[in-house]
Image (spheres, rainbow, N blue to C red):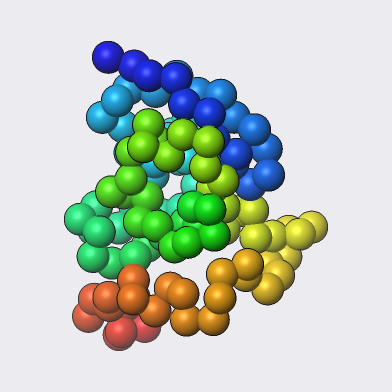
Amino acid sequence: MKTRVSLNVNGESRDLLVPVHKTLLEVLREDLGLIGTKHGCELGECGTCTVLVDGEPTLSCLALPAALEGSAVTTVEGMARGGELHDSPAPPGAFDAHQARSSRCLST
């Protein structure tokens, strides 16, 4: 079963037809080609998939697009100007709660 969803992704209106079970992470990467948002644990623990939804950090591996109808989604690509990252629209420390670290990350 598919559902129609309207989202504003990185400042661009998008009307999508997506399976109801597909996560925001999958839609961003597979349907919209925005691969800056990464697959991580897919359990909502690592924060690798974090995007901003209406300005709030959201774990895209747990979010269903149908529940976000009409929302503004900002990915890392949307935080770049001319290929360079600029100051994040998120308040300082907004992503701190989503920074679980694995031993692999800490060893590099």
